[in-house]
Image (cartoon, rainbow, N blue to C red; front, side):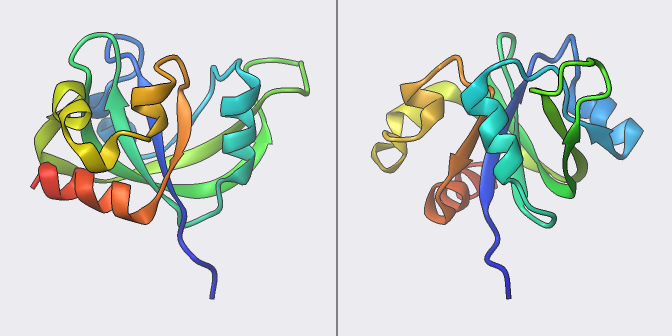
Length: 137
């Protein structure tokens, strides 16, 4: 059986919010134009769990999504370098977890959200994912 992997994706709420994502019920995750983030998209497997983070305004983890389709060509560009995955919402966190809370938590010191602020798609270890969920429950 395949082991679930864990991820965090960032979206600016004015561009694509958690609320809009829930209305849509499913979306392809486009607009990634960073090679490291793209490589992370390529690693995502169906069934992987993804934290949804509002960047710029809000700066907090607001919900959990899951990967429902593995990577394919980004339909918004002809450039074959860029890919998307399809995500569906699973559930909102009871309490959004802020970047400040995450930075204050020693067990989360190594996550890319803290170390590489610009990265829009990043892997998480299972225990990091679980810790953020615990903080948001």
